[in-house]
Length: 293
Image (cartoon, rainbow, N blue to C red; front, side, top):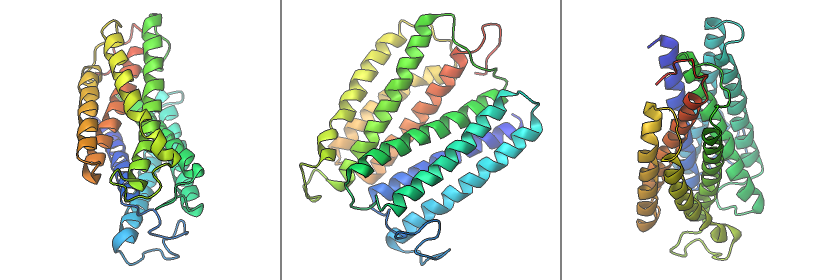
């Protein structure tokens, strides 16, 4: 494996770590740990690291490192590839997405859509932030795919494959967005009643995520068995990851959504998304091209 490919995988993994730390900030209610201050923390470059401030500052710090890592990847890909190479598109989209992550994060902090805030604005901002995160992971995954020899994507000659992939994409985005809303509801309004207003909009939306997940998984297994998607390691992992998501989702609820289980569930969700994007890239390769595994 070439050094640039190894580095690309590292950048992808590091960004997954950033996502998990972001979930930790939300799950522990530490979003206000730096106050209404950005990019500084409480007006300081390095604040006293304790409690919510330590968690929020740690997330900001690794997010800044992630931005630098992506910028280095952009420069490396630009120097290592020729004009028109698809990996250049991938890193540019990655850079746009990670800048978007920073801007959305700043907006959430400055608008004080953090901690115990249960406003409609936060309910909308959280899933939108998640969708941008999916774009970042997809762009990094495609960059790796193209660096490993993949070609530019084009629609498959098999319309059933195209429809299945589009349906899968829409389903995963909707499930992920609804999952973000459910996670927020679980944080603000625990089922033990300690969160106060049990009739908030967020609690009403909490049921949407598991329903979507079960319906989509059922249809996915059914369609997957009838669609000729090219074989790859990523494709072979998809059913196992879907099953793991369903199992951990149930366990998460039974255990009362503990923070550690939320992080495990989110890690599997990120792995599922990366595997799906890779499977899609393999399926949309020109037929005469040998695709990366």
